[in-house]
Image (cartoon, rainbow, N blue to C red):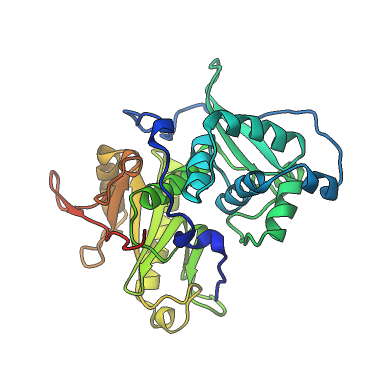
Amino acid sequence: MNTYSVFNDSKMYRSDIDEQQEVSIPSYPIFALKKNEEIHRTLVIYKRESIEQIQEKIDSTDRAIIEEIARSKYLTTNHIYKFVSLRGVNLSRRNLHKRMLKLMKYRLVKESEILLPGVVNGIKYYEVDINGYRIALSRGVIFNYGNRYLSFNKKMEMGIVDTPQDVKRILVGNQIIIGLLQSKAKMERFGVMETFRYDGINLDNCIIRTAANVKIDNTSVLAYEVVRDCSEAYQKLAEKVQRYYKILQSKKYLESNYHGDLTFPQLIICGESLEHNRKIVEYLKSQNLWNSEDVILFTEDLLNIKDTLQSIYEITGEEGIRWYRLPESKAG
């Protein structure tokens, strides 16, 4: 059975975010996939100091930043600002930028950017570097296969370098969690890139890994899978939906599963837009993977940026949708 840390506990993230520092909501999904995108690593000159020396030069805010990035795998500065603010950390966006530069120089975090050819500015995101990984471990951050730390050389050696699609999938998953926390949705825990499976030897491929997951209570567990608009993403989704249906048909799952849940997960697909979600439905139908008895729900990128508990819907036909409202937390 999985173990959790305070960084998966929603009670730690109940502070309000300073609205004066909030950025405007975009009119389009910024994490939508674009053709010919590339990932560029930001190169910096490192300060070669021991982990003990580095520990003396960082403070509790720096550690909070490292913890959030480590658990989340990939975060933008906007994501980082919101996660640490939800923890009650007093931090301005300008100060965050300065801190990120310091953390990069000490190999605590590393920066990459998703860029289109010929375009100067893209989407910058961060992940832990070797020293940040060590500090995160010492702080109690739990690493699993989905958010594990690997050096760039090790990734190249193993052939598992993430693509822009992979990175955006995780960024959207983190945005979903932030949106739920900001909206004060009821939840007991949340996770990033974790698996749903039963404990023990898994011989029937009864396992799925989703971009985000949220346990509302013992009767409701949400598995958010993020899908971008490309053929590779549809193929991966088809395989995942097949395995999801296997979980729902498994008697073993409720007897003993990875999260200790007492109910089956509800799959929620996050597409780039309503139009994209309808396209996903048609694709699943073409693969004989649309089961009206085991309803798959949907959400969209922009719905998870707004402060709303009504962000999930069921597609009921060519034009119809049925909205669902998440319960609100009674905590402060």
